[in-house]
Length: 577
Image 1 (cartoon, rainbow, N blue to C red):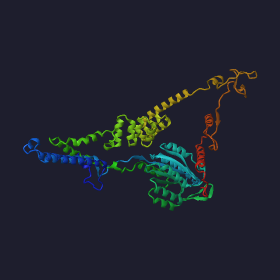
Image 2 (image 1 turned 45 degrees about the vertical axis):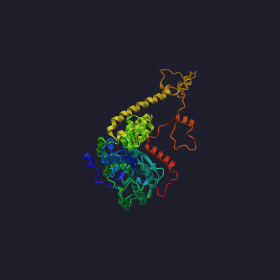
Image 3 (image 1 turned 180 degrees about the vertical axis):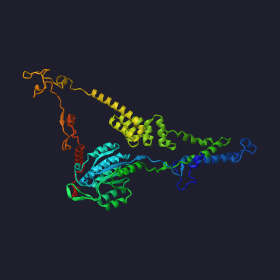
Image 4 (image 1 turned 135 degrees about the vertical axis):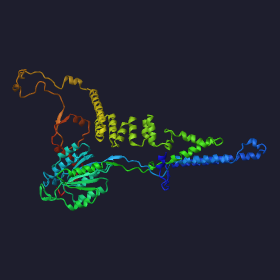
């Protein structure tokens, strides 16, 4: 108790003083009514005394004085008043509530304009940039990373992931020739960067690898960091002397030092000079690791105030003890308290008078009333757990997705597994193990169980498919053997390979199948309904030939499709380098 009292902010700050539950103060109205009834009731014996002879009064009325009535009444009023004030929740200092922990990310933007093929930095600016990216991820920044490439149009190469090896693999295949629109459209880049970084709650970093920052680019960068919580790291991939742009012999790409000096004034923008070793990207990774975990803003609502109502427990308890004295009891005055005490249950309509929503939810959760508990919980992880226990796995998965911690990812995997979304569940377990190595064994076990369930479900689906062509398959099997004809060459076990017939089909080579081969389309079909049942059936009977092994060719097609879909109005500008 002594420690509790020392934590109280004394003296009371009356400017901050208020009641957390001011509606309870209306109980003073029935208290005032009870006081009036007691005072009026005390006058009744005085009226009777006027009607009874003085000789008989000692035998009719108990001896006493005015203190016998006023002292118990005084203590009753004081004790009840203190109890009402305590229930109303007096408060004058705030509680320090820790904010929710959120993790930062890093978005890498790689310039793929034609000037990045310049050779003032060997072997080229772009190749050195890709090597620097490999060194950067080798330094383990610790945050989820995404990769976006840009020239005349920006294109997302990899969404945010912790698999750095996958990002390095994709980055290694990038080339300037893959960009569908030449030039350097920084305005479109920053629009996509803002779209990707807006949902990120933690102050994070954008790592820009480019060879030149113009004055117009500097204005866009400054405007973005001034209106955002994120920071910009620029790694300059060019030498001070500059170099001619391949394909544009009269154009020399060189950085204006004045632009860099104007950017360096902004504390949210950091200019990094290229070094021969890994010092440059190592420092960037170190700064990202140092500010990896952030804390959301603390709540400032009424729940963040200290409820000091417990201070009246001792004085009220002492006054209640006095009611055990003979002649002091005013039992009927406490009848309203019986109704108030009956309202202490979490199932009553007045439960909010006594308990927080989370406490009510916890009690209902322990009573296995999971659906009601989920309705009461305010804390999202508890709400998600109640939804999972209640069998509402769709809601549980959505709520667990709001928790970016390792525990949230693991629980989301459990909910997804219940929904039969096994691939997503295994990905969630993998992410949980990545965020918290302590969950590695548990996540591996869960992945094994989910994989086994997936195999069982797939087997059941295959067995349960209706076989509508049993009779036809018996009559015309997949390998229909035809009868021998007189002109067929004679074959035996001793027939040599060179003597095999050069033309014609083997006797058992007639395969009945509607499976066709097709190559990957250069662009989506337009003007055709690809959602009809007939088209869907036809699509099932098509197998793609082996795609090209070069990832760069795949990215080039992907970027071209994105340009046709999202940037139809974007045309090459006058500056195509």
